Image 1: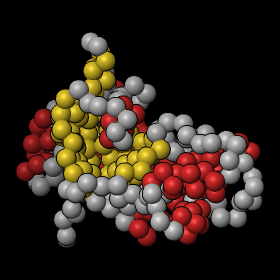
Image 2: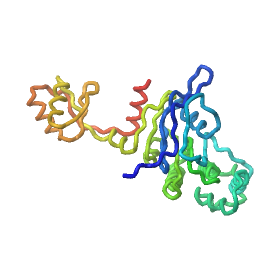
Image 3: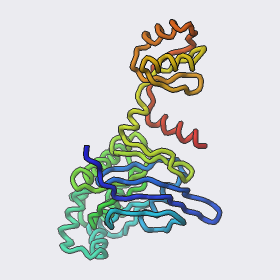
Image 4: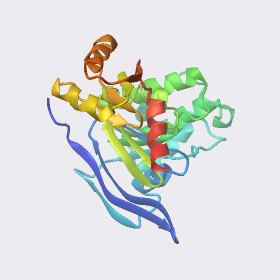
Length: 295
């Protein structure tokens, strides 16, 4: 399997406001052409980090390095739009600021990418729906065709149709144009449908960095077994090639053996079975347990 090229490396980033630490030793990397999801509760430091990466504020310490200077597009917090201009004129103003050649061609291309090609050219942005404004804001971030796109809560407040449209836009930008995306969102079920990797933050720190496959393995169904002697049972099972771990009152095991096979094995050890059941864990529960452990 070909190793992906690293586009951005964040090493030991800190940000302080007086005595208050908003970020502490944040370290992770983003590979070229991937969609990386930034996850965490309110106050975790996600927006502060995205503002640093966008060049809006400076970090107090740490380093940000890139393989080559990327063009960066960003949608941070509320979209900055000119409400009394049309989508076309908002994009024209941004294109002229960026010194883009063939402005009209670029505007039409971007409008097509964000699904606004059919909007009346005279319709002002102030009369757009929330979903249209969000797409318009992404259009502004795309006007210079960035290598790296930063999106802070782009689906906040959108209805299901708007969320679906936003998802399709983000996937298209990666799959068709190879744009790398760093996206933060509280809607975990939606992130699961678009991201390749997750960076989970809490209290200004990265508490976990895992791929989509890593997450799938972490939340996969396990068998929970509680006995009168969990260490003995775990040792015996490991000798049989069944790896597991003890958590609380339970031995957590992968579903290598059936529940009935486990029961039969444990009974041969002369150990009392208190409880045994298979159970999976969704991303939401996994995330909430991680955050709870960090509090």
